[in-house]
Amino acid sequence: MSKNHNDIYDYRHPLYIGKWRKSVVCLTKDFANDNLDEPHLKRRTTILSQYPEIERLYGYDFSTAIIAIVSTMVQVLATYAFSHLLVDWNWTIFFFSFVIGGSMTQIYSAVIHETAHCLAASTEMQNRILGLIANIAIPIPIAMSFRRYHLEHHAFLGVNGIDLDLPLKWEREIISAMLKSPQPWEYINFVFTFLMDILIYHYCGYRGLLYLFMSLWFGFSIHPAAARFIQEHYTFDDGQETYSYYGNLNKIFMNIGYHNEHHDFPQIPWTRLPEVHNIATEYYDNLAYHTSWFMVHWNFISQKQFGPQCRVTRSLKAHKKGRKLLATLKRMLS
Image (cartoon, rainbow, N blue to C red):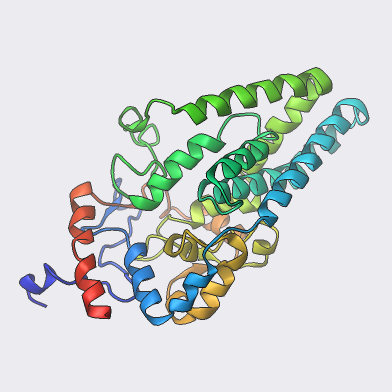
């Protein structure tokens, strides 16, 4: 392909697998680097040209609101039980905070993720309120900040200085360039969560807060579902920067493993992501994917080739360069 043709055509079409090589820890300390934009917008355009019926899946699913309320009640009741009823059951609180508390924390994370995309209710205000509800049993304020940075993560996947999902350089030295002044809803989130923590401490004491913090730590560290933080964008293959998980735990954790489908179609709620896969199966079955979160954790910890640098990045200039080819794609598919 001539250099001139490269200037008007995205060679990655239709699966949008790049030509970059994944970073290997023993060989490099740097991220892999791509010279074009993230792949998902163009893959969505390509898939919709073949399967326009997918647009009928857009919208929201109010079952997420029910899950947010019920799961929060479960965790708050457990907090009360360990502070008033099971006060001498120290090993039980440890076990319960991993099995139930950690699982609840991952479910809250999935709910907050849905509300960030306004997929849990019909209005932005309703989604923000549901995000705050899901934050009640997480003793630090994360919902509104996650919403803000996560939407940038979708729009600028892998872009240096914008995508906060990339490991930083205390993990990687660039935290000062990426933190921004809080917005009003983030202040509301802070005050709301602080007041909830005070109420929990008042009615449940230090054991109540300890249970919530233990649940948070387990849920975001060694819990099986926490492997999704590695599964989603850590590079296991050359040229592919997003990976899905198709194991049975999707049934418990709100299909959070369908990550390629989600990035391709962020307007579709979690309950309908398997339908996207089933409709456009030739696109997703031809991408690398995971079937075990346990093996994701195990491989990342035990194999020396994996580390924080196993990601792909791009400059804002490269992102814009790739976006300029979108018009060519649309003309080609029309």
